[in-house]
Structure formats: structure tokens, C-alpha cells
Length: 606
Image 1 (cartoon, rainbow, N blue to C red):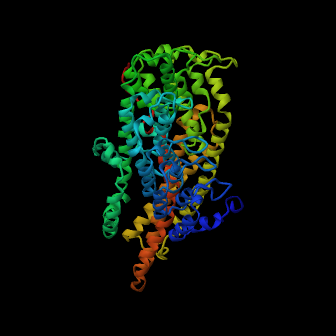
Image 2 (cartoon, helix red, strand yellow; image 1 turned 30 degrees about the vertical axis):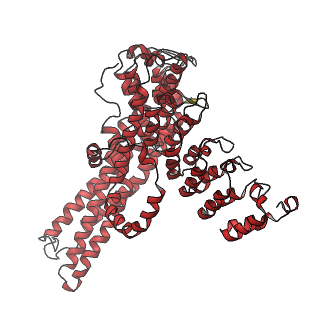
């Protein structure tokens, strides 16, 4: 504390402010007027107003603001923050920010902290979205568009990260020059390619969700005036809203639980991102060399991330741009990036490219052609989306074969700097994954074959120890004429035959050669047959068991109550198998015989 230097104890004032005790603060200031201009804590450099804002005391801030001149609000603490900077990055209390802005609107243009960010950008950086939206509504546009000033693109990047695309769209529509403004070396057009990749690409949804997504209508862009927060109205409405909040929550509950809200948000983000991209595409003609270089970097980024909509729209807006990242070794190869980073949507664009044969004949500085790029191991981010090393190996081989169908004849024999053909390069890069895939397949087959063998043994024995035993005179089963007995016999036979099939199939997996090409169809097909047969054998075994229990109890009326619990308990193992193994079976079937990630029909362009 600075008591010795100023002649009074600033600790008393600090305590009164932290406790929101305005009478004590006013009394102290009346006796020591100079206290307002002194630091309360030497190490932080905070003035009384800084402390009041930090603790979030609105009434205290309002009273202190009345005592000081507008310039007083521009004082910064030891970390370079004005009171508005603290309100924007620490508290997020909009009425406090409004009080400060009303006193001195110049605070909106003062840089804060080590990064020298304006308050509105600070708010979005730390995730205080509502605060950021308010500050945007009162920040003058000229703050964002000064020449050689990164505030505009820095703010847009913050909006892209937080997903507030409506605000980013509003600013870009008013200040289109920000498309090529740079934020520490990266332009806004590059930020669009990078941060909006997920929003621009339509996600794969289930059938009903896809149908709902298609029919959702997104309203036109919100007017800027709607971003403004009227604090007086909000204060008046809060009291009225308390009574209806519960009712609104109950009404919206089915909407939220059904996933409709998630689908709407996906469509909203995609629509806003597309509108942002459309604004950018309007500014892609008559470009300087610097701007052309920015677009080239953005296209290469889009190719790496699979941002197909960005790639195609930019190429359509200015067809000359695609040549920079397709035929220029200096600027890079967009389609080579797409193959290396396993971006199927960009690769599908290559297949429809009019100059596909030219691209397919090109090579990198290491003499790697397009097929060599497919022979590289996919990034971990792509491989980890696929369960199991065997299916990962399958996807890698699918990529290799797809690219092989695109390249010119003879390319598959070209050597790179390591003296390897694409196939040899593939085997070298995928040796570890192939070994992991082999181990995964064998472990799965071994575990499942043990279960299958146990079922074979049980069902074989059950066929000769039928429920109720045999008639001593005729030797036929006692319950031979019962309908449920026929259910037992059929289920027992099906279970034994299915389990035998699964065991033999898994044995075939264990004795396979495990060549790279076997992971494409041979091994997955065997696994599909084995798991399907095992699933059928477990299901029919439980049916046979349930039929046996019912046969034994149906003639004893006092034990009829046991039917339902027995059937329910019998369904537990089957349910567990479905939950644990059925998704894997579906994934294998889908990746082997389902829709191809590479479209069969592609549109010619440009």
C-alpha cells in the first residue's frame, strides 16, 4: 500500500470498494480528494475505478464515474488495461461497459494488454460473447479499417473462432476492404479458409436430420441495430421474464432434446459462412500480386482442410486463381495437398478438373507424383476417425486405388528420390499400420472364435439333452408335439450351424496372408461373415434357452410369473452384444460395401 507516500491509507479505500460500500468510499474521497488519482495497489497500478470494475460493482462504478473527468477513464493499470478493457475481458457485465462508454466513447479505440487489442476484440477472445456484441454495436467502423492496422482482421478472426458469423458478415458487408487486410501475417481470406472450414462443409447427417436440414429456412442477415443491447429495456424485462422462463424452458425442451436445435444451428452457421464467402468472392478480380499470393495461400489451406466449397467458389469467381496452386511448383500443389491430407471432397474436384491429366503428370521436388502422395501415411487426425487399424489400412488402400485410377498410365512405375515406386513407397510407409491391422484382426478373430466354439459345444450337447427328456417307451422327446419344442429345435440347429460358420470364418482370418490388398475386400468380408454368424448364433441360442424355460414352466401355473423375467434376462447378453459389437459390424459393412467416399459422377470444371 502507498500510505507513506500519499499521507493516507489506501487500504481503507480498497476495502470499501471491494465491499461495495459507497458511503464509506464517498466519505474517504471527501476527506482525501487526491485518492481518486492514486494507485490503490502499487503492484497492479489499479485506480479506484479499475478496482470497482474488477469486482463488478455497477452502482460503485456509476458513482465513481460521476466524480471524474472523461480522460480519467483512459488510465491504464500495470498490465495496460483501461477500466473498459477489464470490463470487456474479466467481468462481462454489460451495464458497467455501457456506463463507461457513455462517459467516454474514446475508450472503444484504446488498445489493451500485451496484445494491444481494442475492447470488442478482447471480449470475443475471452468468450464473453454478449459483451462483445454490445461493444460491436457502439464501436465506430473506422476503428476496424485503418490502413496497416490489424484490428479489423483480428476482430474478424475472433468472430470466426467463437462462431459469431452474423457479426463478421455485417462488418465485411460494410467494409469489404477487410477481405485482404492482414492480422500478423494472415489475411482475412486465409482466416475464412481456415476457421470456416467446418461451417462451409455440409456435415453428413442421418436421413431424417438431412431432411430437416434441407427444409429449414434461415432468415436474412440480422440488421446491425439488432446487435445493440438496450440495457434499460433489458432491466425492465428481466422482472417480467422470471415468471415465463420456466414455461419457455418446458416448451423448448422437446425441441432441444430431439436435436432440432443442433440441426438449426448447423444450417445457420453454414448459411452465414456461405454469405461471408460470397462477399469475399465479389472481390477476387483485378488483384495485385500481394492479394494473389494471399489467395494462393488460402486455396492451399482449403485443400489441406477439405474446404471444398471455398475451393470451388473461389475458383469459379476467378478461374485464373486455380492455376496458381495447380501448375506452379513455387506456390504449391493444391491437389497434391488434398491427396496427402486425405480430403476426399477436394480430390473429387480434381477428378472433374478439365486439366486433370496435366496435374496427374506433375511431381514435387522429391520426384513424388500424385500416386506417391497417396502412398504416404495419412495424418493421425484422419486415421483416428476410423475404428481399428484394419479398417484404417483398408481406407488407405482405397485412397491408393482411387488415385491410381486418376493418374496417367505409367505413373505407377515412376521412381521418387528414394528410388521407390508408389507401391513400394506405400508398403514402406504403411508397414507399421499393416502390422497393427494384422494384430487387430487376429485378436478380434481369436476372441470371437472362442465364443463361437463355446456356443458350438453347448448347442451340440443341447440337441441330445432335450428339455423334458425322452419317452422311456418310444425314445422320442416328451415334448415333441409342443410348438415351443419345435422352436427350440430350429433355434438350436441354427445356433450350432451359425457358430460353426463363424468359427471356420475366424479360422480363415487367422490363417490369411495379410498382404496390403487383402485389407480392401478379403479380410473385411471374412470379418463381416464371422461377426454376422456369431450374432445370429447368440440370438438363436438365447431363443432356444428361453423356449426351454417356458416349456419346463408352462405346465406349472404357479410358476408362470417367471416367464417375463427369464425372457428379459435372456435379452441382456444379446443387447450387450448389439451395443458393443454391432456398431463395428455396421462400420465394416459401410466401409467395404457402402457408399464410396469418392463420387462416381463428377461435374466438369472450370
